[in-house]
Amino acid sequence: MSSCQDNSKAVEAIIQAIKKDLSSNNPDYALGSIDKLLQISPDNPDAYNLQGVAYLQLKKHKEAIQSFNQAIKLDDSRYKYFYNRGNVFFEEKKFEDALSDFQKAIEKNPPQNPQTADLYSNRATTLALLNRREEALQDFDKAIELNPADPTIFYRRGKTYLFLKNFKLAEADLQKVTELSPKNADAYYFLASAQIGKNGNAQPETCQLLQKAMELGHTESEKMWVEVCQNPQEIIY
Image (cartoon, rainbow, N blue to C red; front, side):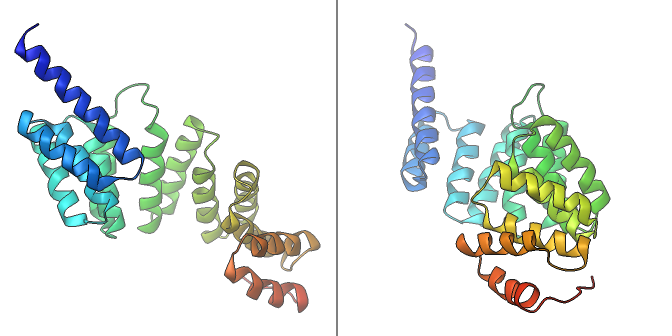
C-alpha cells in the first residue's frame, strides 16, 4: 500500500473523529484533532471548514469567519462553506452578508442535497429580517415543499404571516407546528396571537393555548392570558 493511500486513510479517520466530536458538542476536542489534521494536510479546505464549525460552537465568531474564509479561498465550489459562514454572519446580525452567503450556497448547491430545505429556510429568515417578507415567503414555500415535516420552517413562515397580519395563514402554520413539535411553547403563544388577530378577541380555545404555553414555561403567555382571558375585550391590531 502506498504512503499516499496511508495518508488519505489517516486524513479520513481524523475527519470522522472531528465530526463525531462536533456532533457531540465537544469543539475543544475537535480543535485539537483539527490541528493534527492540518499538520498532515495543510491545504485541506474541509479542515478549515470544520475548524470554523468548532469556533462557531464556541461562539468565537471572528475566528470562525477566518476559518471559513480560508476554506473558501482553497475551494470556492462547496456550498457548505458559504452556508456555514452565512450562519456566523447571521448570528452577528450582519444580515446583508448572511444573505449573500446563503445565496451563494443555493447557487452552488448540488442536486439531491438533503440540506436544500435548510438553505432556503435560512435565506427566507434573513430576507424577513431585512423586511423583504414577500420574497421570504417564496423561499419558505420552497423549503416546505422540500421538507414538509420540519416544524422550524412552518414556525418561521407562520411568524412572517403574523407580522404581515395574515392571521388565517399564520394560524394554519403555527397549528402545524404544535402538531409536529408539541412541546414548542413559542408556537402555542404565537398561535394564540394569530387567533386573537383573526377573531378580534380570545376564544376559549385561545385561552387553552395560552395555558399550554404557560405549562411549557413561556413567561409572556401569563401576561397575555390575564389581559385577554381574565379581562376579555376586543383586541384591535
